[in-house]
Length: 535
Image 1 (cartoon, rainbow, N blue to C red):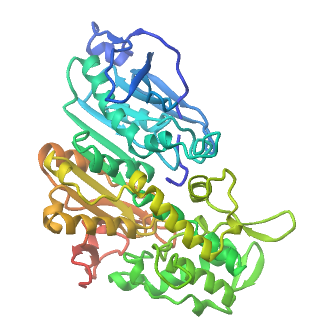
Image 2: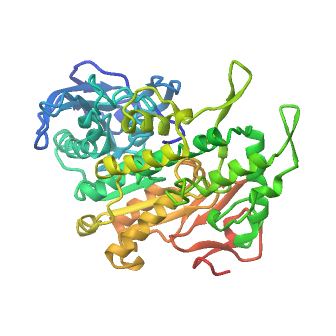
Image 3: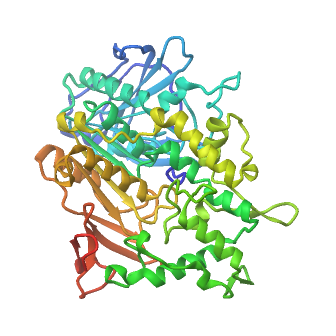
């Protein structure tokens, strides 16, 4: 659910052509010509290739068309490449999934990079593919036979039953097929296999990376899986909790009021890591009581609003996270310091009343897959009903799309490396779920040190969903895979509560960055990695 900052590639006609190198490439090798033709491919067992097309693209700008809710995008200075599109089906299941492979005409770096998707888009629509080609990679992605970022029209068949074939594609099957076929395409096109293969994704893409490590450990040498949407069957229901709370409490704070609570909490707990830098390194350790804000005023769009006890109760429940009516904890809440309005969105309706505006990803999951109804009716979900839906989702879908199997022994045996960062202020997917998964892997596979040999997690203080800049994470992963240099830190830049850019060297879990008491608190130079809890 990558904050819906996402992108689709237009369908292309069948074609075969030869590359004519761009002027700069021709100067280096004036005799080079590149075949761009449809290869003969062999699909994995149970899968059939329906068609293969090939289109040669000259160097220039890649135009990525609009895919709701995003507008079009244009990626400049992309070198010439061959675009291979493979259409697959699973006989008897009525699905049609596409795998796209973009092959640089010049200066291929010998590597495959498969890119993941966002929200309900299984893959990339052109932007990430173009970026990978610009970096010299052969790039691949799949649409899994589904469409758009928030369109869940593919969930149910005409008879109202869940389309399990498409859900299996989206969950993991199509990613594996993309890996298998992309390697075949590369070997046929370049007359040699890729030296290394990588997967790169965030959010839904992060979950896909974990699915690959768990189910198909031989597909990739390295997996970069950030802010991963693991525990999908649980957290997707859990992220509807803020809307349920507002509806049940009949209180809908404005964005300004939500921000006032967040700012107050950050100010109260900011120094827990030793530095007043506008970031919460450990939101779970912040015990700020939202009732402290009752009676204060907030200016919002020229109006003075007074924080009420009902407002504070809504925020308390959202931070605390979903529980059963008897008080049993179900999942993590929105982290303290994260944008509450992302999941607790509100708007004024035609009658002048403030109402909730659910984030479409969890609303779509609960309505289509759990309730089996195409149109969401979130206001009808009571606390009691929410607990039932949470339990139902886990029972029906954990094995299909939970992506939380802690047994990574196959991936470790294959020599794979798994690298993840996750922001502590992630407004859509709480980092707590990723931490819990890492802890489960440690218990299953012999402790933290043994797991660190192949799987490292870095938490980014104040980092929002898929919004941690400057990590150079793919370079860190390739150095680990190809040279055995495991990342000890990841350089990163996040934005603090005051809107300032803050640099940090992210520390491998479970260590955390501690301020050393000198220098600018927004500069990574003043921090060192230390065991959690030690100042």
